[in-house]
Image 1 (cartoon, one colour):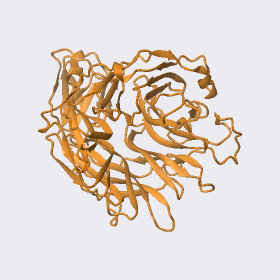
Image 2 (cartoon, one colour):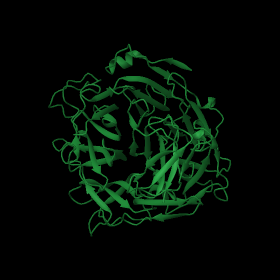
Image 3 (cartoon, rainbow, N blue to C red):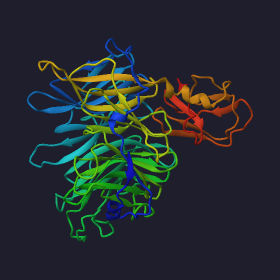
Image 4 (spheres, helix red, strand yellow):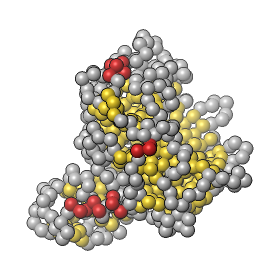
Amino acid sequence: MAQEFPFSLLNNAGISSRLLLAWVILPLGLSAQSEWSQDLDWTASGWLVSYADWWEELEDICPWGDEWAAAAVQVYNENGSNGPALFKWNESGSGEWLFPFNSTPGHVQIKQIAVDDGQRLWCGTNIETSGKDLTSTWGVWVLDSGGALDPSIGDNDTPGLTKFNFGSPFQELHGFAAAQKPDSTPCWMATGMVLDPCCFHKEMPALLILDDNGNPLSTFGDSGRVIVDVSLPGIVDTLGLTLAHERHDIGGIYMCGISIENGLVAAGAYSNTAHYEVMIAKHQWDGMLDEGFGIGGLVHLNLNPGVNHWVEQLVALPDGSIMALVVSHDGGDLPSGWHWLILDEEGTAMYWESYDPGAAWESVSFVENFPAEQPVGFGFIETPGTGTLLEANGDWMQTPESFAMQPESDLGGIMSAMHCAYHPAWERLLLAGLWEPENPSEEPKLAISHWQNDAISPIANQANFPSSYLLYPNPARAGSEIHITGTSSFSCWSLLSPTGRMVHEWTEVQSALPLALQLPTGLSVGTYWIRPCGEVKRSIPVVIE
């Protein structure tokens, strides 16, 4: 069922009613039959189950090179104390627990993990000290491809760890993700908040950019750091409160961020002391807000008055627009489902879509590394099954399809805290979460399953090329020359890293067959992707050995 978006609500948020937006609701009962199936050949039961202690709270998962995948887990024991751990597993279903975070004083909470092109695992964590100072900081732990702490990071006392401070004694890390500078070199983007030292009840969004070695990027903001005061007079307060510099209660949090071609976009929540609202900001590469985006660099929307709602995740679309995943607490005008907000390059709201499954969604996210032109989402409800996939077709005036993920091998009991990621080397969707067995005497465990769908594999996506198409040699070595036969229609080609980052671009490629492309030197071992510039679906794997 589709209905017109309530324009009075948009006007309160500072958006003109001339914009065409759509409110689309898709009940879970209308889900299409899933094209995904559980890989029952992966393990004897189709599940990998393991536990470290009394309770395992899953925080994040991601591929870890070609051979491994990793899960970030906060492990609790029966007396209530907890600490971070990692669980890594391979394609054959063997796994092991890692506990590398014990060398620092204070309580460590793991938030997000990501992998660089050298297959090092970067772990963003919060660190709280329980002494009389009661201060907090955050840090990044780096593990090499074998799971050992990287001695090139940190110092002798805490190898593998670098601590950071957003700029206040009280702070919190919310997001940590790979990004890319304008010259295509990799970097890292950390998002969070600080409490204003003058009044600790005021949250201020914070952003820190690190280079590929974990050092603050000196050309961004103040030694890599930016703190935004959203209480300045230019910000619209949707509650109608008087704004002034002495207005200490107006604040916000950056919960996620992405890099785009001409800047950085960070998003999260605007706080007006009553509730959180949607906030999206665009920064230039010097740290300044981009005045051409939204109002003074910020977009602020009150989409569910009186109820907390915020941006959980961002993704850049092929046409340059930005999609925001909006999460809301129960109540108010929004259903407790899945919400997509699409902005153009100037921050103008273009489309809005909402999905009402008839129950509260416990976790929602975009699926990273997914080999599709448009984003694919994942959501989970504590009902039988392991989650729901939402697949968009690029036409935002039509409802994307919803696929219920029903396991063929049912563990029974209750699943919670589900997370989803796509492993491009294995061509499998990874689903993981906390499993509570039906027998109360059994310990809760981390449960992982793999899902397959041949229709969206990278091999299937090559169908747009002629059948005589060939890339050789494959595998290849960094710095060597590769050749492409079967097509001469493209004069520009891109090389993407195993994590999807563009690492090289060939322009003015001669049309003579076979095409000759010189691979750059310094490439790490792994599976890379070559595709014509701008052709998202036409990716060709090339293995660097």
